[in-house]
Image (cartoon, rainbow, N blue to C red; front, side, top):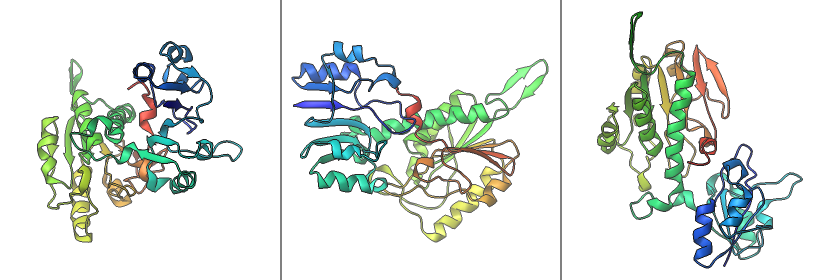
Length: 321
C-alpha cells in the first residue's frame, strides 16, 4: 500500500498528519510512504528526517491512502484538494463533515472512502484514535495560557513585603476534554477554579482536577460523551446561573460543544456587561461559531471593559504536542 502525506494548506496550520517516527513504523510494516516536500517544516520536522525514516519525497496525491490533518480545501487558483485524490482512494483526516459539506460531496463524487477521525466515539477502546479529544486537550491548555497572558493581574496568590495579591478567579464552562484540561492548567498556574457542565455526572471529574463544581439542575447527556441541546426552560435556568457566577470572575473560559452542530451561545451581552472591567473571556468554541455572543472568531475584542478572545485552531500553535 502507498501512503502519502500532503502539505496542509489551511491558513495558520502548522501540524502534519504523520511525524517521522510514525513514518518509520509504517515503512517497517511494509508500506510505501510518500511525503510532499515541506509537509513537516512548520512542525519542525525537516524533509531529511522523513527520508531517513524510509519515506520518499514527492507527489502525495497518487496514493492508496492519504493522511491529512484537515478536510480537503480549495487551493489558490480555484483548484480543490479533493479533486487531486485518485478515484477510489482512502482519506484519513479530521473532516468535521457537517462544516465541510462541499468537500464531502466532492469526495463522494470521486468515490473516495473518507474516515473522519473527529467522529470516532469517545470510548475507552477507541480513545487512541480519537483526534478530537487529543486536540481538545491542547485547546484547553493553550486557551488558559492565553487567558493568563491577557489578564492584567497574577493567577496565583502572591505574598510580598509590599502586600498580598489574591488568587485570580477562573470559571470554566463545559467539562469535556478541553474543559478539564483548562481547569487543571489554571490550577497549576495558581488560580482558584470553578467549573460547570450540564451533565451532573462530570462533577467528580471536575473535582478530581482541582475545580469546584457549580451545579445547575438540568440534564443533557448525548452520545459519545457530549452534551445535548437544552430545552428553552433549561436554557433559562442556565443563563441565570451563568449571569450570577460570571459577575465575580476574573477569567471565564468557555468550552461548550454539542456533537455534530455549532457551538451553543451561552454568554449574551447582558452577562458580559455584569463582569468586572479588566476581566477576560476566552471563547474556545470559536471554531464552532462561538459560545459568546460578542466573540469575533479569530479576533480579540473589548466590550464593556471585558477582553474577549476567540482563538481559532489552537492545536496548530503546538504542532509537536
